[in-house]
Amino acid sequence: MTDTPPPEAAPAAPEPPMLYGVPLSDSRGQRVLHPSRATYVATVRALLDDTYTMCADLTAVDYLVHPNRSLPDGVAAERFEVVVNLLSLERRERIRLRVQVPADDPTIPTLFDHYPGSEAMEREAFDMFGIVFTDHPDLTRILMPEDWEGYPLRKDDHPNRIPVQFTADFSSQQAES
Amino acid sequence: MTTHDIVTTIREGNEPAQGLKPRSEISARELLREVGAVLRMSEAEAAKLGDIPVDPSDDQTMIINMGPQHPSTHGVLRLMLELQGETVLRCKPIIGYLHTGMEKTGEQLTYMQGGTNVTRMDYLSPLNNELVFSLATEKLLGIEDDIPERAVWMRMLLSELNRMSSHLLFLATNGMDIGAVSMMLYGWREREEVLRFFQKVTGLRMNHNFIRPGGVAADLPAGWRDDVLRLLDLIPPRLEEYDILMTGQPIWRARLQGVGVITPEEAIALSATGPILRSTGVPWDLRRDQPYLRYPEVEFDVVVGSYGDAFDRYAIRLNEVRESMRIVQQILDRMPGGDYRIQNKKVTPPPRARIDESMEALIHHFKIFTEGFKVPEGEVYVAIESPRGEIGCYIASDGSATPYRMHVRAPSFVNIQCMPHMMRGGLMADAVAVISSVDPVLGEVDR
Image (cartoon, rainbow over all chains, first blue to last red; front, side, top):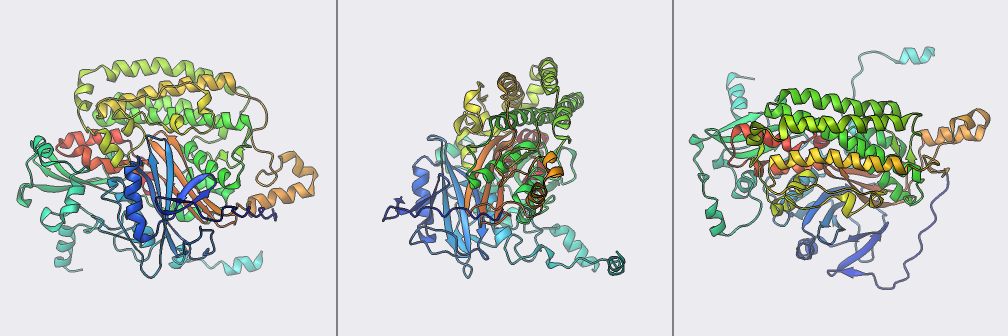
């Protein structure tokens, strides 16, 4: 149980691999692209033209308490990461995009114009992480109530933020047992 | 709250920003989204569609709520519909009434406990949820190629039986929504037969937590083969009864054919998967196109439709039950012996008998179930074909015993985006047929 996983072998290639002009990495055999926010839409556009016609999934991760994750050279880790999974039905391939989004300006362009199916998923990412997808047609909360405060899946938004009120006094029972 | 406030609240609705607003108050992009416009088309193409009155003023239309407490919305789906007479002009699904923060809960549970959480998402195909979670965890652990053959084939058996039970329930609810109420009883009855088998194997009818990282929780019980054979004898004649009751029946066809039509380009653009995508003629089934488990070794057909309407989606699901039975038949012939879970001490608790005689085994067992096992840092996305489409699991691990982030790509959540498109220009009564043919499970939509 205390075994730590063996350290992964250092990549031998001196130059990081690139695809569509953005760094490419390999995660357990799955291809991952790391565009910046500036090259995000252009990369997606290139992928859409290159048979990746379906946006299978779009979500986000809050890396607040795990900042030292492994990223290819030249990609600076930020607090948020938007993760997009694209699917090519023609080539039966998947590719993943991980875009770094800083905490002080959590905005990223929407993919609605390229993939209309990303609409609900972007709303969910906005609802859960507070990441603003600019030019999204209807950026409102989707799962939480409209007047909800905070973004539940952020690491600093704790589920027990609202203290639970107990009417019974359990302290005496614990003392007896 | 004064009377004025109450009147204002009623007029604006409970959640004004999430709801469907009058046309005068929304942007053009939002309007396009709500009328279901998906693809950019030329003006000539758009003119051909011109039978729907364009942009009626607010006083000619009415915005009404359908749900969340409507029997044919399959749970707590709320649709806001803009109607002109009986014609649906705009539609907006409003969800979140069943949101229980399962992705947040998933961050608190160890990988061993995670199955209990994901199995409750799509409660009609719990074993597929567990399967995708387990596959993702195994990929992170790097043990995905070491799972014993028997466990893999057991997973396939359970996954296919679960597809059958889920589709049988769809046939039941679809029948009920369209008005063939006797079908509801038949569908539930046959599903119950499958669930009885699950109860014998896993101990529970639903929410099994049976497929776990490393294999499955227990071996198949004695007599399982006879039970499966009984199911395979029992269900085909019942499916033929359904054909008589529904498929060839003129009223049934009139209610479904040509209703909720969607084209392949639109379905792909809206990220629709599963029977919705296949109903448009796109032969996309992850079991065949991005195979997992041992699906390349069994023979089955991918059922596709041609018109993309509600009838095709019904017929696809009916025939997928038959294909699943074909796969189950082959699994019966090929079920190998051996272990039902990986003998990797890191993820597998020691057998019960060892606990009585070995202190180390007891400690090991205790540690696995309290602390869990550590999973190397990394992130993976694994997708499989659930009865409703592509269910995917994205796990980011920070090297601890709980997922740093666990996201489930729920097929129903994505598929309900097709509804505004399918309902546009249809009748209010057909809206029920459309909801039913999308077959959303709200536990998975809201998570």
